[in-house]
Structure formats: structure tokens, C-alpha cells
Image (cartoon, rainbow, N blue to C red; front, side):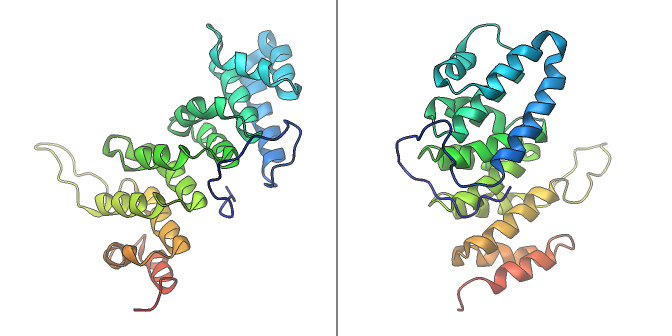
Length: 227
């Protein structure tokens, strides 16, 4: 996801057809529509095509709340509304950002960055720092980096500090693999380097000792303000 130039802004949403800046929106829409068309099957093909092409925001908004709607239709409606800046998509996109399916997380993160809702940084920070959801924190971490919000650096620091603490295996349990969530930790390291917040120096120095993180940690430290 290449949305690091975006920031959170409080603005009125533009027309559904408005180009909102990011070159990834069109290819992501095509990829999303193809994936969801397969998920919908023959029975949902017409509805999928309609939701993918309609310029009627009210139709998309109804798809978010109507009982009995399948997940794929809610996802497509939320993505299109989010990319159009319609904040009715916010709650659905936050749920999708923490989904077990990485493809859904990617699309939700992009739409949330395009949405520019001031609630997004706090929601992403809550997901990233939740110790029970570490396996699903990768895209919230990347979104926080892209948003460059006041919540971003503290959340990434807290998440990385927690992930660097060695896990103690339960009695009679097989040893846990080293750094089971190392990709999330790596995203935190890279994100802190991009944010350039000097508060990250101690945790980045701690990351230097981890083989999978050391190179990125050294690079991130080089991007911090000189002491």
C-alpha cells in the first residue's frame, strides 16, 4: 500500500467519481471486484457488477446495513464509499482492517486512508496495540505509518516493544518459534523510520539485536534526528 503521503483531514466527501489522489485505487478496485465476483458466484454476479459500477451512494450505503447481505457485498460497498470519502463506511472498514483475510485488510486500509476520517488513527492504533490480535496487526501498523497522525508513533513504539519481549512457553508445550509476528515487528521498525520520531530510538536500538530486524532497525535509526 503506497499511501504514505496522505494525512488525516476533516473534509467534506467529494463526488463518487472524483479522483482522490492514489494511483492504487483503480487497480485495487479491479482486483477486489474480481475476487468478490468469484466469492459471489453465479447467484451474486449481477449484484456484484451493480455495486462495482453504481454512482449511487445511497445504494452502496444500503448494502452496508441491509439484513442478510453477504460479506462480499458489504466489503465492496464499504470500499467504494471509503474511497469516495463517505464516512458511512468507517465502521465496516475498521472491521475489515482486522480481518483474518489479508486481502480484505489491504483493501480496507487503502479505503480508510482515502476516507480521511479523523477517527481512523485511534481505531488503527487500538487494533495495532491489542495483544490478542497481534497476528492481524500488520495492516493497521502500515496504515498508521501512512497516516502520520499523532497516534502513529506511540502506537508503533508500543507494539514493537511488546513484540520484542521474549515469549515464555507454557509448561509441557513445544517451544514457540522465534519472533512469531516478526513481519508485524518489521513493519513497526520500517514505519518508525519513515515517521522519524526520536521517541522510537530506544526500541529501535533494542531491535538491532534481532536478526530479522537488525538491518531495518539500523536504517530506521539513521533517519532519526541527530542526537
